[in-house]
Image 1: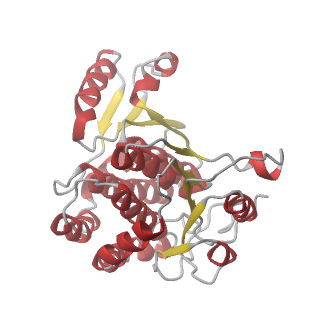
Image 2 (image 1 turned 90 degrees about the horizontal axis):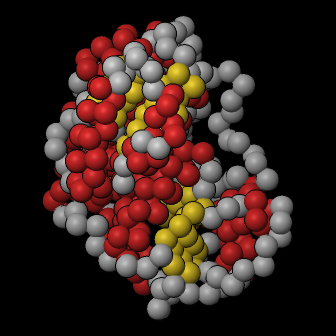
Length: 332
């Protein structure tokens, strides 16, 4: 049956997240022990869905550490052979398979240039795992469906733990343990997403907007819709949308807002009114139980997975195996 594998792997997320939450103290301490002192910067290295987890990490790391944080550009190393001094920097390399050649090559070059490296992967025996100073395993089990689901949310939770090692993300251990139950509640409540999927099953493009930490969720939701349905879905910052791209929002245009709360909530409210004034078909992604903003982002990603799968099925596509896509993309 179409979409069955993706649904099964989505359903494993509460257990995967609970397992990681139970190990949080040890994982945070492991990262804290090897941090460069003083820390110059934190840089995240990734592609695909892992890159969206990296965007989430980029925001959290800078907030937590008070030091610069950013995203690496692998082509600088694989194509331009850049020579950069990485002493004093923490590099966090994310790859679900641990086998993407450009991530491995770039991480190796950064470590050779002085970086302390952490690998976040679903394969503790991968090539990436063999070249980093510390491996944080998502421990999600085999993921067969092409769209990454349980490995992405697990990566995001581990990224949050890295940020906690740098300072504080203002999530208590008790709140962290609530994430699994919140995701279970979302998975048990598909009706709001089913209604939205029926509403947008035949659109040819979709804007998905968020800001701050929620921007990462908007990017990941858009990627899931694109790869499972073929719809041209664009994940964008609400701030960027209000510049030139707002010209693409016509009457009836579908726009999904990812509102994860926190300091940017007022920005979402302003954009919602602006889009309403333009007569767009604007919907706020329905979330589950209230969580601290860093955790609500992960919950929003799960809702995005539900939307992508449902729309794909309504369009007659198989979200388990989208055409011309493979599970591991071997970019070099």
